[in-house]
Length: 422
Image (cartoon, rainbow, N blue to C red; front, top):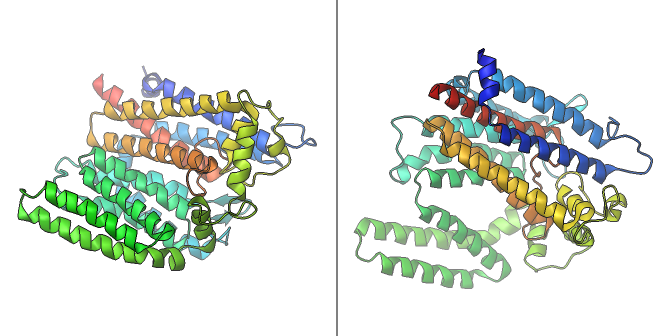
């Protein structure tokens, strides 16, 4: 059998079918969100559904090309791709126009691209190349310096220079990859504690945060009293660092974050009631989802959608269209399909035979999971509105191509694993 025939045979077809199912259903909902009564066809290329169809075909075509590329290419050129990506991210703010306070979109004729969406895939490749080396072992915090730098550099560029907070925060998904590879759970707990301290300082004041920190670190020092002095000094230094962090939270909130970002956090924390301003999106999306009840109003019958009450209803808030037109049953079905998809990716990661493929596959699974949790959470009003797409559902060429790249490189690595077994 030919090599291409082996690739087709060894592909994980259940994952591909789920990908196609999510993509097609997402496309239908984009049409539902952008539909008006003067529109006759879903293939009308003057509206977003027609344009999304072009992006879907382009992404699938690109995915097929990826399947024909030798899997070793990603390992060999991982650092080169990463270097090119950093250069592109650095020059993007110089070429980009201001889009809602963000400088992350490059216009090429009739096409607008967001390089930050592709940066997640290339960062995953570079991280897998470094941590996948045979001699690399994750023993202590010093072994995490370079992996943190690989993830932190594009994250900082996207957040600071491009002012695209939502996309930058997705890079935190790589912390789950570090944890899977042996990073101490205390690092994740430290991150959770940092979020809690930030909320307490912003919502109340610094003093409750300092009391919480004193209690937490007091318990940790008491529980580890008999261990080496080295660890007790680390805990003490961490305690001092958290005190400094607490003092800096108010400065970051008032001076660093953009006004619209501050307002969204204040509305979420109950510090402001602004249903006609910053809280409008969430208020209208929850109304749309609730109005769908159990079985929904029917496809193309959503009144909140048709009357344009929900801003960004075919991009970041596409899930509210699902809730209104397909109801609780349809929404639950979509979430279950996403759950099966992510579990499938984790299963694929577990069965990889080499470190590079396994780390990359875990990175992909964590990125998809982070996008799902944050997007659905913000649509339901459980998380701040930070503007990240729902994979394969939200309208947009950059996100569609970026997610397809992530997935099809994973499929190629997995198919190569099967070839090696034979």
